[in-house]
Every structure is written in C-alpha cells, then in structure tokens.
Length: 440
Image 1 (cartoon, rainbow, N blue to C red):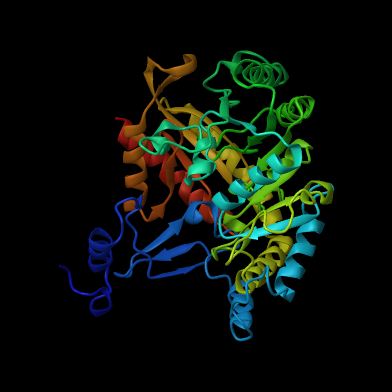
Image 2: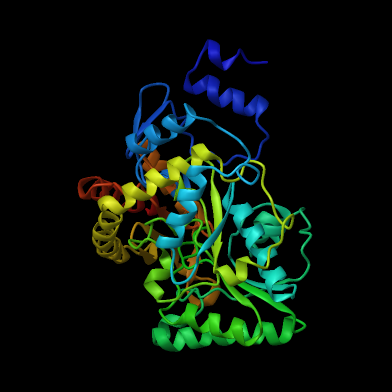
C-alpha cells in the first residue's frame, strides 16, 4: 500500500495512487498535472510541457482561463446547486438563450446534462420521441460515448468488446474516409455521392423502415480526424429526412471554435435537426447539452428526461464566460493558426511515413503508415507502433500530443485555441524530427 498522496504530492505518488485506487481504464499521457496555464502544463517535478491536445479538445480558451475561473468563482459564492430542472435560475436561463443565438438555424431549445455521452443519449431519446421511430444509423469508426446507449452508436470494436450494447436498433454505414476508401482517385464531389449512396444502401438493407435518426460527427475525432467532403452532410440529411428520420450532428469534440468556425457544421452549410455539444462548452467544467428547434423539443413531456446535476449554475456561468472569450478573438485565432497548420502539416507528406494530413482549424491529424506495405482501402498499412513511438518522443521533448484514430496511427493536433504561431511551429518542427528519427 502506497503512502497517501497528500503526504508526498509528486509524479511518483500520483501515478502510484492511480495504480492502487483508480479503476484501470485510464489512458495516460504520463504527465501528472500539478498546474496548467493557457497552453502549458506543469508536472509535480516542475517539468513544463506544451499542450497540443487540451485534454481531448476541452480547454479551448486555454487552461485556467482567468475569465472562466472568475465566472465560476462568482457563482460559487452565490449558490452551487438547486437542481436546475426544479428551481429555475439565471445562469441556466441566460446560457439557454445564448445557445439559441449562436447555434445554427432555428435550433432554439436546449437540454443541459453533464457530458457529451449524456448529450448523445438524450438526443437519441428526443429523436425517437419526435419521430415515433426507433432505428438509428451511425458511422463506422465513429465515437459517441461509452455508456451502453452511446456505445451502441460507436463504430469501433475496441470500445465495445465485452460490453454488449443494449440498443439493438442501431446499424452503421461506412465513414467518409477518403484516404482509405479510395476516394482520392475521384473528385471530392464524386466521393461525396459515393459515401451518401452507401448510407442509402445501409438503410435499405439493414433497417426495417423505422428510422429515427442518422448520427454523425461533422469531423470524426476518435476515428482519426476524418473530414467529410463538402456536400456529404447535406446529402445525408436529405436521405435521413426522406426516410422519416432526423440528422443529429455530434459536435462534442468539433464545436466551440475547434475547427476555426464556432461549429464544424458551419463549414458545410448544414443545419442539424439536433446538435449535441460538450467538451469545450465550459472549458473543463462538466457540462453537456443538446439543442433542437422548438417543434422537435416539444416532443419531450414532463418526466421524459431529467438530470439532477445537468445545468449546474456554476458550470453554466463558466460556459457563458467561455463563449464570450471565444467570440473575443479566440475563434478567429483558431481559424488563422489552423490555416497555417494545414499548410505546415501538408509539407510533412514529403516524409515516407506520412500517408495523409487532414483537418479543419485546430483539429488536425497526421496519419502514419508503413509505405512498403498495402493496407486497408488500397492505402499503405497503418503504423500504430510508429505513432506510439512518435508520441513518446514528443513528450520527451516537452510536448503533449494525442495519438489515436481507428487504426491508432494518427497524431492528433487539438491544442488550446489560444496557441501562438511560434508554439505551433515548435510542435510541427519537433514532430518532423520525431518522425524522421523513429522511422529509421
């Protein structure tokens, strides 16, 4: 038995406590955090790291943002909890009104919960209640959460193994993964048509004609930063509507300025029927939401859905401050720095081990491959071992970065949106050196 962490708060004691007392499900980047500010993490031994992952796309306005911290502190001094669905309060009312203003189209009414997973679960319940149908189509390689309902939507065996999801009326269509599905040999418009036709085929062959929703991430995060072709989302919305279902866009990871627009769907000129959100919404405080037009939201009756802690006044106050910060130049910075990053990462494609680079704004991926072996979709074999080594080398050089994707071979750039050009240049330069060193 290890000594109490409070008696010796250092890297070793923190990691030992995790081994002893935290269920062994955590995926560590091996940087115990003692302090964090803006784009910098510091461990208990005083080592500093440049954060290129922001806690999986969460600290969008920078770690320990003063305005967000102050808003939460002010609310803490007023009251913490009254169950927002029992006692109406000002932070919840103001945030709901604000979301009606900043979400696309006629999305108007929001339900507040605690996480992205809960937002997805609630959105599916609402789609089923509104349409009166039960079946849902999601995408292969998608990620929508780890509870049994959202896990049924997640298109990845690695997350499902041994869990037996309880929603059985779910099927999956191929992801619009152009690099691996051969789409680079045809135009983007043609590939959009092909991908949409695959959705139509799956609905026709795997469902019973009782479609409630098609659920899609506008940019697939855990799948490997997969960006669909321009016309894809509008086409699948039309298909969903033709079959009596709704389009649910899961913006949990891609929303709140991550892609250089407030919502990733803004890049594609599509308004979802239901929008799910979390992660960056309150810059690290636990909050999720799903938003729908008033007509669809009205399908919920009293008692259909509830959350004791959802819409906590403290987290809602933090969310309001986060939105203010994003609108005060941070989304614009994500757009500007993201455009530079797109070009900088494209230059890495000159390296043999870099098969593809892709993304929007500050949500970008670098796919590492074995160039001498053929892999899925007539693209080179994914090199997960190289990606792991590169991630470790980056950490040794003082940079924390994500490694993921369906094949676990994608280096994921998702830094705080406050990041500077100088910091990005350091990350890209270090990444090039790490790939060059580790592929030899």
